[in-house]
Image 1 (cartoon, rainbow, N blue to C red):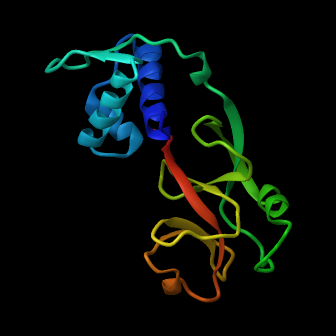
Image 2 (image 1 turned 45 degrees about the horizontal axis):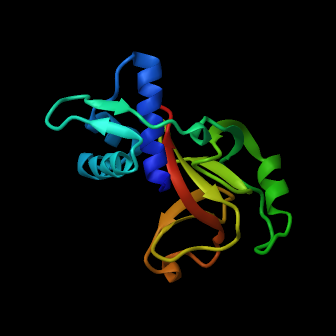
Image 3 (image 1 turned 90 degrees about the vertical axis):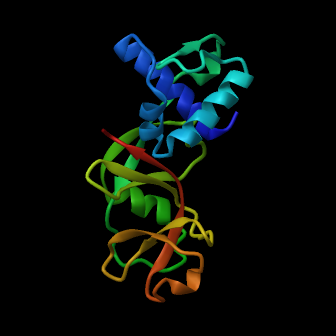
Length: 180
């Protein structure tokens, strides 16, 4: 199961638990930050796997049918970081520095964001980028960089050469979350 399918299933489960009825495809899309068509494809994948049942052309017609205990919420607090002091470009102490300069914590599901060295950066009023501190960037993807001022920035660039030379990479963005 893909991370996006897992996220869609989590949104369905949370809506049913909170509201007593499933979310619409548009609500799932908004919760995932994708188009309704893309959300529908993820729901079709969940249906093929036997985890949900959908009734065509009916609103909110999503029913949970598969039991998957491994999908339980695995809460894990993740540091929220905004700025860093001037640090050497290849700092082996990056996790300690990020932890030391965190301004709070956000709870994430470790199933959606597995692995170590996961951090968050606020990129909007209620939107956060989840990134991995690896000191490596991925061309064509969103990456987190530290500007000369110490401010962290998310940069999407097909060419890493477009990033100013005095910035250094923290790591790739592995997802986005919204607190709304």
